[in-house]
Length: 345
Image (cartoon, rainbow, N blue to C red; front, side, top):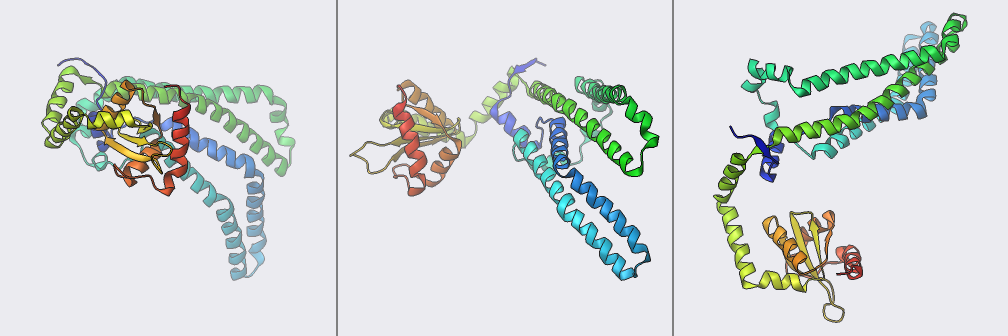
């Protein structure tokens, strides 16, 4: 078997994404969750603590009250805590977790990831996983976390020895305040270590993921051969070749005032000349292979190419070739043309 030295092709990346085989750092997600919780309780921890104490007092005071009255009072306090603290923080953590996951992998719904697979219960594959670089790194992560916690405990014991000695002399309220302070201090130290470590873990997961996805030269050749045999791709290439040969594509690009792209999948050629065109005109559009060809020709003819992902997508979706832009696009396109005119081409 030939060595896997080639970077994964776009097709391979798409196929892996469909299967759910994407690289992401769970540590980054955990760090974000911890940061959200820490920030929330830094702001509202005191009032949360007061309301919890209030709930306990309500429960104690309700012991000698009529049953229905006691239930109403306790449920009111519980509902207050749920609405003010539990639900908001749960929602924020959920949104933060989803946003962190999407920022790493994009939107994915991979059914294959949850399907039963013989490979998942393969003894050979499980042994490989046990002795893999990734498993060693996971062990290192666990040891690192233990070391961080041990160092924090050492620092706390060394710096606050007198407080620990006087612990038995404190009343209940003072004890709770001191415990809350130490928990907060421990949490702060763990969070700091976690944030630093999550950056390293993100790099490691990306590095290992790319290494795992690499292809051999034979695989790249085989994929290219299979792709070339696709009738749709063949037809697209013939049409693109015909446009290039006839000169219509090249002429439209030469005429363009500016080209907006997304980064390699979509390219829109815009033409505007004061006194000649009432509005900017879309004179050429391209997707995938054609978009790459448009960008390549634009560089050859020194036509400004500006990357604006939302604008490129929206123009491609809403404005056809040969149409003037609509009112929705006046401001962003005008800004784009001003930038293009200011560029020294």
